[in-house]
Length: 181
Image (cartoon, rainbow, N blue to C red; front, side, top):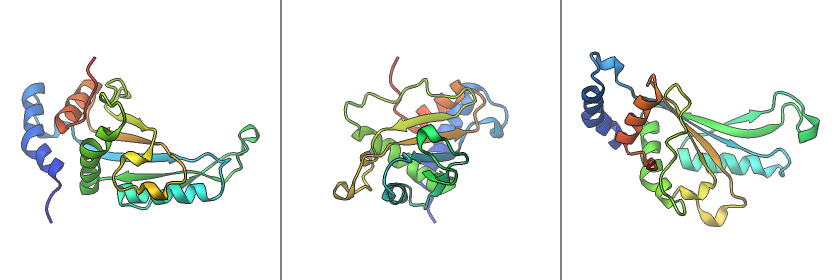
């Protein structure tokens, strides 16, 4: 089986460039993308079919069936009951992760209206990057005729980098379009 395009780019170009730039002495110090977690929250006040629509859209986008997240506590002011479905999430690793990252960077993000790049300040301090997408229709896998409601999602890219600067260099070299300061 062939390796994904971005995995080959990482192995052939990015890893060597990061090793030279950061003066790593060991190959295991070079940061890499470990996993990508996609989360889609659904309001508990919506009709029953909302969670099924979110699961269907996320399955089309990622190619994996998401896990349905249920509430742990009842909160009366939010009209939320314990055990009620409130969203879905999926974790991507290895080949599927590189394929999704490639589609995100090359096809989905440029389709956002007035796109000037993603924020370089969305790192968490430990080398992980989080990105919020307001509309699932930026992904080419979604058929616009079948959409009942627009649904946002959170995408978290988990890296093995120890600092934000290392993770920024990794993602920049992998093709993430960061906005200029």
